[in-house]
Image (tube, rainbow, N blue to C red; front, top):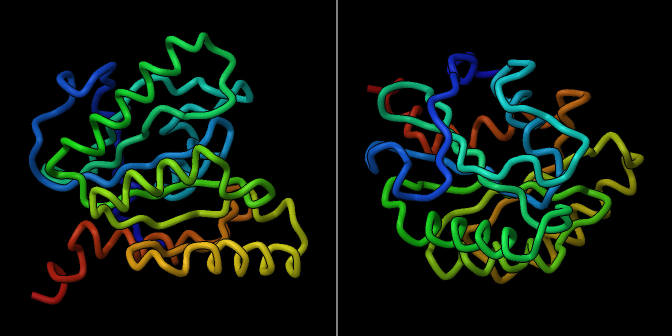
Length: 203
């Protein structure tokens, strides 16, 4: 586990793009359908128990939440999408905020897209992937809650999702379990590249 990510600290929340920190440095965003395990994954990756608030109620994350790693690097927890029990008007507002962020945030270097391994590639996941592909944004998929499936079933799901994405060059994927701390190092390696940490250590 890379200790660099342990230094993550909450920076600010934004209801819209104009309230975000200055558009400079490097950001990596985390997105996923409501209850896909986004907050749990962020906490596991950063080695903290309560960096991102977890909730059994889908749709709790309604803001852009920024976490600072250093002066130039940030993680961003995007609003959950999908089956949140909120009014349609609020859902549309979240969707607009997501689209604005992906389309206009210049410092956005990549996105970690979380999918429950038991229910991957929903309509909302595909829409997010289409947005990212259109913007040329690299995407790394975490098939979360891997502990909920036996090893063989998990490997088969990984294969099926990889097969469905064979035409997308800028998309990688892996299994992940926040509960069992599975896949943390693999995800860190992707983040290291996006945050340009390797080149700094090699200089």
